[in-house]
Length: 347
Ligand code: FAQ
Image (spheres, rainbow, N blue to C red):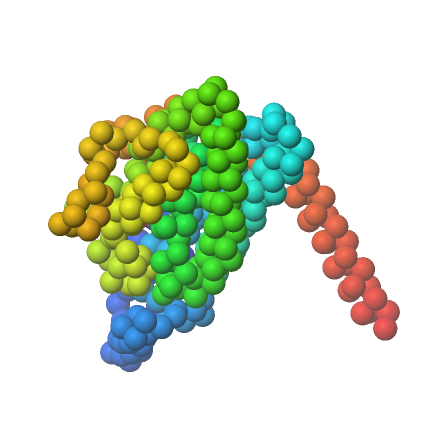
């Protein structure tokens, strides 16, 4: 689909490798390649870290670029649903918190683009894939934020699901991604708590406020369960991702952990999770839950959710409107470089 089309260099290939054309290697080159592959396998088997300058198989590199760039895009597009409420936050305190949160998400996108750049893919390539609709980003950001309660629910449930998925990524085998995730998880955990606190305040308010929270929970619950990705049986990337230590826990296992962690929180909050099949299963030691609408999920992933077109158009416009800033920064950098050169020549 998207980042798979990127042409990135791969280890000690003797000649530039064209897609689908296997280079003919001399026995010495084959030996070097075999040793590099062996070292890579040893590091993965020992649960070690692969760093940017280490040799890595082309497929490992591509998988990481795919996942990290998708993650970066999700953070950046994810600023939009909540950003929609900055100008309408109910108090100065809530507005300040929301601005800080949305800014954090932007920061996460930037760390993640930087992590992906260490794999040899430029930010321009990644942004181009997003802006032309070739890149995926999380399905969850294609739904509208209709009321102020949606902002609290995004913090509580969307950030809650994101943390559940991202904590295992702190142990990802690719060093720059794992290290970026440590800081991101700390910030997401604050986001989750602020969302819960904001909802708690509304639940202690009047009946209209309580109904607003319940309505937001009803609209977001199932979308949050789908965020973890398709069921394990349909997850095309899982087996290899887990073999490489990129993914540590399967989509279904993370989804189950999220359900089990959220049920008691919903009780404290006083909201009902909109699933008649949700109940504790003593034998499994987990909550059972109902059927996720996967047709709706795939329609959204494939560009036909309620807000996909609006989200993409907003990102493209923001990028185009920012062109003068990038031009000015480049002109300034060129000037600085020229001045330095002149000073060096004069010295
Ligand atoms: N949306 O084989 P799998 C956040 C695609 S950040 C769209 O299971 P994989 C912070 C998947 O790409 C949220 N597409 O794939 C925040 C693949 O297609 P491809 C983002 C999805 O990679 C909070 C296909 O389905 N988090 O929320 C989705 O092994 C609040 C088959 O799936 C990350 O990106 C989906 N939900 O597992 C910001 C975490 N699920 O690429 C603002 C890092 C699956 O082959 C406000 N990513 N697909 O064409 C991951 O952990 C993994 O990539 C998964 C998917 C778990 C998302």
